[in-house]
Image 1 (cartoon, one colour):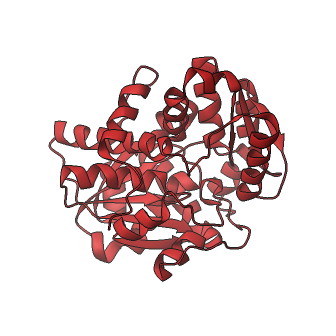
Image 2: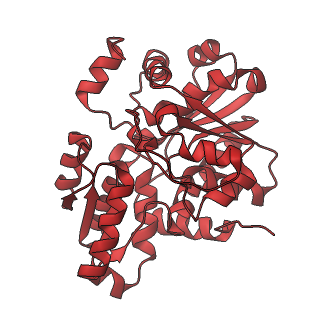
Amino acid sequence: MSTWPISYDDVLAAERRIRPYMTATPLRSYAELDDALGMHVLVKHENHAPTNAFKVRNGLSVVTAMTEADRRLGVVGATMGNYGQGLAWAGRALGVTVTICVPHGVNPDKLAAMRGLGARIVTEGSDYDDAIAVMDRLVHDEGLYPAHGVNHPAVPAGAGTIMLEILEQAKATNELLDAMVIVIGGGSQAVGAMTVLRHRGRECPVFGVQAQGAATIHDAWHDREPRIGPTPTTFAEGMATRQTYELTFDALCEGLAGFVLVSDAELAGAMRLLWQTTHNIAEPAGAGGIAALGKLGDRLRGKSVGVIISGANVDTTTLRQVLNHEM
């Protein structure tokens, strides 16, 4: 029996809700990038979205789906940065009070952006999953509406709008799409994309990628058993999760064609390659799809492959280290 968590109609409904607030992001290809990787790469520029990351779609999808009564309560989420910015941006756009729970050590630029968007910040714990526990406590203590960054059906539905755009944009330019390579943090991007592809009947395998220092979902996928792992040790904040999530894990097991790990050094190399060939800045997780192409070369060489630059919110210290080959 299928365990699929959302429907294609859910994605279409999210598309209708978020479209008044954001336009489609570009889908582009670059000859130098193709030559470097030995395949035709279609790059979806979520780094050009409001807040410079795809998770503004997730935040908008959640807040626009809330009832007026829920909006009056105020909303609370947990984040390593990008989802919090997306939720704060959506809250400001719709006049909803937003509280964001973060662990210690979150990217200071992302914190500043969330505060600038009017969010209240609560800092506690050592990683993302600790921040989730704080979020749950505030839901109980303050009666806030819970906007879990993974286990909320509006989240993968919002992320699925990326795939809707990719298919329409590829069709408009007569581009083929043989496969997708998608970063897994909680799994919303991949589940959203696979929901659209399944409904459209597209023979387009989706491959997942995680950081070696945050490999819990990857390892659980290979064993087909949910689990909680150790605290992540990667500079890729968008991948820094340490457990599987109820809403997405079974769908990842059912739908992914493969799942690979990349090192922080490989992520840094992918960030440099994107800058050299596209002049776009990607944060570490945003370069994960490009980093994974080296691991998937035998399966994808010569094909047309879609990747998503999921975000560009890298702090200046990290970016300087990457560009100076210090990472």
